[in-house]
Length: 125
Image 1 (cartoon, rainbow, N blue to C red):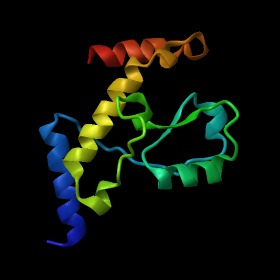
Image 2 (tube, one colour):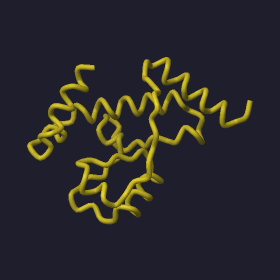
Image 3 (tube, rainbow, N blue to C red):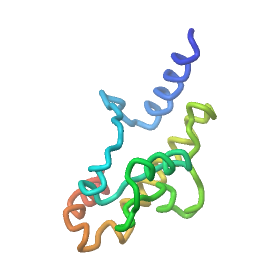
Image 4 (cartoon, rainbow, N blue to C red):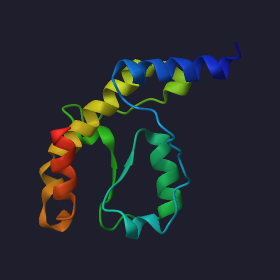
């Protein structure tokens, strides 16, 4: 089995074990216009941040954050499992970061009023 297929299979197995549906998700390139469109722009590691800031430019509204900022280990970074092969650790960290983000008081401020419903729905899942 080719190396890439092994990695995809390992990742898929971790997600299935956590009950996370894979579906037909696709990534897309970040655009400069996304800065005005979204309240938060989340990165996982230094490389993500480097390229996000290259594309977006300045962050005057403080929208760009690391996902782990919303956890008990805010200085931690989520290493790319494609290179580390630590798919389970990555999935655990992303889950922890997402839970922390959804519980974050800053998500539910009046500046993010439209997110209150989203956060409420996601918390009930």
